Image (cartoon, rainbow, N blue to C red; front, side):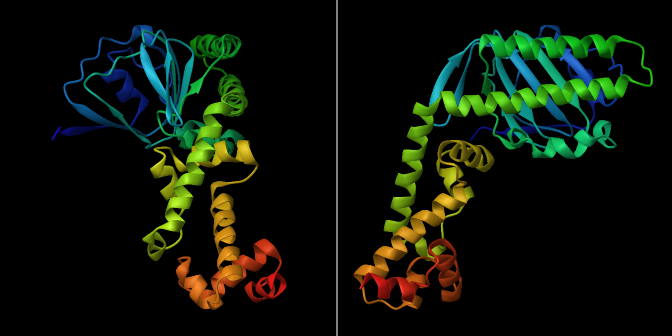
Length: 303
């Protein structure tokens, strides 16, 4: 079995040291170019953890990326966003990007700014590494212009306005990422519809099997079955259907409950236990919330 080593990068200064780059001009924020990175040789699979936010734009990267359950080739214009302490893995056959940008932001840099709280609302920081943003040419130019502006500002002598200007540019970039991710969900609808069909099949299989004895399916269970992060799956389904993963699970549950109420003589409690509920009253409460009827009212109306 292949062994995995762990690399935990706790500061931006440590990152620069590992990459054999000059010391950062600011200890809490750094903008680097992939062109300046040394040639990396990965001896063994590495678990990578950093204590800061990172936004990367990779170009000229002969790699493949997974979107949902499909694999796409790309050679330029791919963005990824990483939250502090997010875990990613680098394999021995890792091929680094030949060009692009890497923005590193320590949470302390944003501590007294509005963006310090707002950045947590950008869901894409919770996406898995393979759920990157594939940019169009125009989108890539827009993002590159912001990186260039940041590079210019970071090279200037620090004054009373420096941090405010840096944060304004960072927030603008993150807003564009939000817009472009929403565009990606829409324009890749064929892939997304395939994802929706797989969600349906997984839920049907779960409700048809003995797995309900383990409890109701969760959003995390679905995400793991699809090899996606739960946040990415929820955002994708919300864009497709207007509803969250949890809502779709409940829809399937209510559909099965109606079927059992209308075609069997089982008691409400028996149906509740059959559907994975520990307490029948929890089932009745959810059923009434979703249908505006109690299970018994539904059964009486159906008959």
